[in-house]
Image 1 (tube, rainbow, N blue to C red):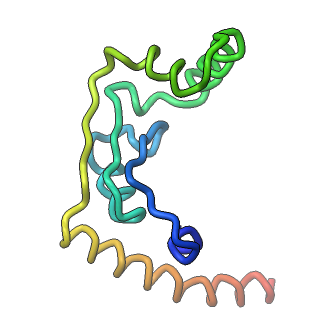
Image 2 (image 1 turned 90 degrees about the horizontal axis):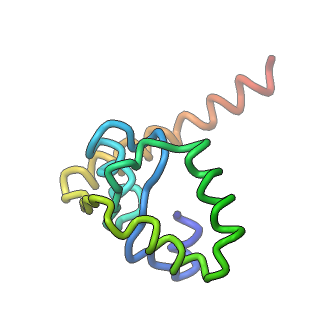
Image 3 (image 1 turned 60 degrees about the vertical axis):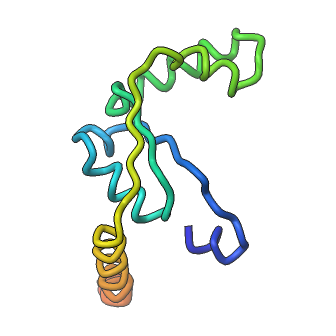
Length: 113
């Protein structure tokens, strides 16, 4: 995301899907803090893998553009949009700084194995 921001790209909204969103709100708020934008998940957001592959297979026979296809598939699906607040954003920034500091230690360990 830092590369996108450096290039002037802004994400207005993200739809999340997959195991990261299995626990309601937790992954969604973390992702929102990471991308600095609202994240929407649907009731079935925790289902990934085979479900996503089935959607892809159905789309290949849909005969319409992807956005239209997805709007039809998810039209009646319950959705929740969350945006991280300032506290959550600060917590993510703190995590990211510590994570980046750890990369040097990880690289040094890998080089010395």
